[in-house]
Image 1: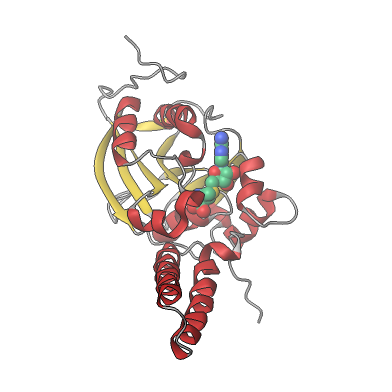
Image 2: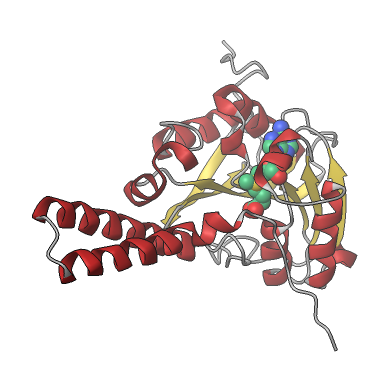
Length: 270
Ligand SMILES: C[S@@+](CC[C@H](N)C(=O)[O-])C[C@H]1O[C@@H](n2cnc3c(N)ncnc32)[C@H](O)[C@@H]1O
């Protein structure tokens, strides 16, 4: 029997580019040592090899080609039967992460399927087809609905989801876009609902490995996100990092006291 495998369609170099470079630099370094090339040249090669090895570790750990584990066991710990919204679902990596680990949940995989999608994924045909194929392969298509639209103006009623996940998506749309998306996430979440927000972490290792290439959100770090999620009305239940990832487990205040304090333009109210 032939088993289809998951294909998230991220470019190969994202996972293996540094490995190829590490091998290439390592071979040249070995030649430099064997034939006693000039010391400064050997120094440069040692630096390049170490850089490529560090990048390989970061990206293999990031595991863009596989399904990551939930970064916190506390997300939807008691969420049997939860209706979850994945904002910026892409080719399904974050949706499958949640649906596999929370077997009672159903999920709306939401994405714009536009320019940003085409920029990130090597996927032929309709963008939704790759997402659907992965959901089927993972055996979770029956618990998922695919919807398209802009996360800055979600096409859902207030309080229509028990939980939200968004992985490496809100850091792709600029500061004002991220503020609007957070306010929208707050609006469509039930009071007491949980929101797992995952972002590319601009930590020293990711910066060393990729320089500006992966620095989504520019210089926006954990302080910026902490203050913006609070401004949107969320309580931070947990915050943490994994190599390459910054995550927040957020909750919409059950008693309504955490109402958003930002207008859609990002301008504070009063
Ligand atoms: C890097 S991918 C992340 C995909 C997936 N969550 C994952 O973990 O692999 C970012 C996704 O955000 C989507 N996106 C970007 N801007 C968007 C917007 N304004 N509204 C909805 N989705 C958007 C892109 O189409 C893309 O699929």
